[in-house]
Length: 87
Image (tube, rainbow, N blue to C red; front, side, top):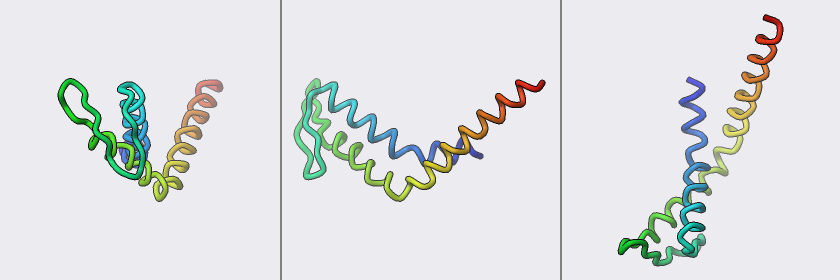
């Protein structure tokens, strides 16, 4: 259950990272104002890059839940280390 919640909550951040990485690799400009044409192998991926980077705005309402899932993951990891230490 925690894994499903974590994936759902962190999806906007992952999509933003993917969009920024693709833009960096292809050398295409990306901003919030509008989409820019970006031709790769005859395909225009400018709209895709724009959509991926706009997912970053969804991180604003998701931020408390992202922090909660990150805290739970760290707590679970510490708990596993402590349990392994005493076993």
